[in-house]
Length: 82
Image (tube, rainbow, N blue to C red):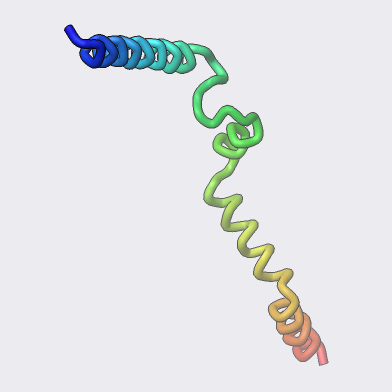
């Protein structure tokens, strides 16, 4: 065998070993609680507590408190009172 063939076989063995180590590491991380996606406590909390109603409420609040919408709302209320 030539040195090129030996280096190619060694490279293939190294790749196979790296693949096996990567698969083992990924399998181990899935089995440990708290290591699943998302890892961040903040993102896990958001995923569990964010509801469509909360999103709608936030959107409406942002819309109402925009200056132009707020001016129109206050203007309309003041016109009705006078």
